Length: 300
Image (cartoon, rainbow, N blue to C red; front, side, top):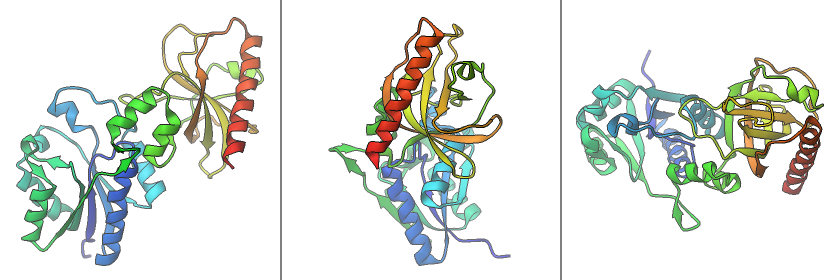
């Protein structure tokens, strides 16, 4: 069987924001023109973790990035390379040749600031010249601007950490989200007549500002429910400091333990606070649910 041809977008794609969207849409366009498969090449961990020996906390883990690329752009051919010292120290020409041969690349699409190979010596301009000698096209995408700023994952991380979720979503081009399997919790929400589902952010992923958000919970079949989601350490009931994500689905009845679920964050309602009693917390949850419902009604 002949190997498929790939029109390959290369990058890390953290958050899969509107700047990344320009690359992905160009890869889809080139694939249609060249009778190829639109594809993505990324890394499982951020290169800066190894190159600069510092942890870069991410908007999404690899699974989250893959889910967004599939859902928002319809690209199913996604390849993750494990970024290790061998990849880090590979001369850029060797890296390019390896990718071309292994993935049968007929077209590359990269961002204006994309670098690769030992010491970051490879870039879009060098890759385009290298490819031209081999009859392969290479598109370099210019920076995408919004509100006079270059859209970047670094900018969006700061917005999310500050709870500026609506602004972050404008730069992302889609709601910031968390995909996880629903975990069994402490069943406190049920005692408050506001049953919740419990989820956690993966290790290495930034946690939004602690507080209550208007969100939507999306179930595997596509059913979507407005929700009130609390991100934080549950100070009313716990002192272990562990961050959890608890969502009260508005209008839903049932058991979702073990179900893969996605939360889309839309609006920061209030900071997380400690309540003096169950009754006080229960009343606030009802108030937050009304606030979330009103927010989504205004969006229609």
